Image 1: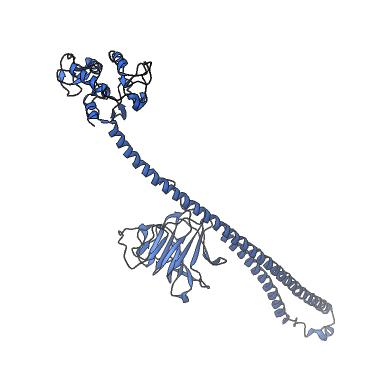
Image 2 (image 1 turned 90 degrees about the vertical axis):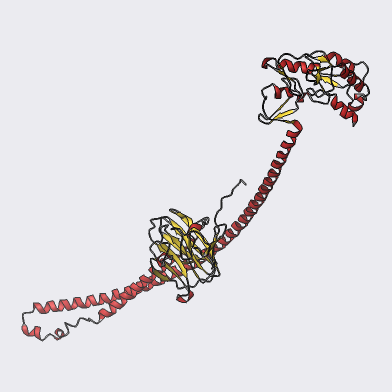
Length: 531
């Protein structure tokens, strides 16, 4: 330990190595002759000279007094040190016998040097000496000195001359070890953030893969369901086709027979009338008055079977009823086909997000903006002109074209309304309720009409004959066609009511719920790849 302390005391503060030909300045500081000579030479163009250790200044080139005592101490110290090759295994390039103590290296000669050969290289200022354990990459290319400092302003490794007299003069510098520790700390922080980010990315990938797997499973299930439903529809249509065609054929035959009978009766009547007409014409042409007056058929000439007209009318009515029945069957088939088209005309559900700014303060909106739950606890949101005052909320965005649908699941509520509205619907009072104005259309379920549903618009109520047994409802919109349809999400899906009108403004999804929850199902969310 004492040897290490003495080695530190015998080291030049410029080159950080053991003194070589040490000299003393007026201020009492000691340096290697070559080191201080080159350092003072670099200061020649800046005016005053200064000591790099204590910063004492000299107006002229300070005399360099060789410190003989210090030279002897250095020689005695080096003579007592163990051979360098025993530690490092480095040999002197110029020694015949190898290995020999190699204590330093020369940058110019690119050779390792022992004490004897070192003396020759120390006399020339062009020789740059450094510890053999130091890599050539750690030498300043401009001043040929070891890089010991780090300039924080320029992010560069520099030597002492770069700091004192070079382009980094006056900059904030740190020791290399200190700067390295600080950078390592920053790198560890960055590494930890990268690890966390990679972990989140992996979790995101796993989540997306799970969503993809579920989407594929759902698509496969839907494909099977649709295939089965289409098979059932084709079977029903085939059966209905045979039944309708058979009924049409029967009705056609019946109508044909009825009309043939009527035509036959009319032909008989026409022949009888023709005979009557000829007989009357004969009477009119007679000149004998007695013969005209005594004709036996003259009395019933006015009775021309007027009672038969009712029979003819009844027969015609029966024919018309048959044609009307055929027409109704045709319309039924057309409605069934249209219904099937409505069910399958959309590929994906619309991504409906609720607008919290429009939600009544008694509605709790979920974080994903997909569910509205009625609560007695007021949410204390600011009162604005956009906010509903009666347990209602509408979607953020509206539809101005295309075909769309969205599904809802109702739970725990016996009073709810779902539908579409214009953005300028009233926000307060009874006129703001869905269907109580000409700006909204809604499917309503309440305690009236024996708990059955109804469709409402502009205060007009259309009671639906059927009850809703499931908890799901689908709302379909065909903006250009002006059609808004409500379906019950049962198996198979069932049309409740279709509205046909003309839409003139963007249509927003809107819902009302009391003492329960309405949740919007489905929707396509954007995938964010950044964390």
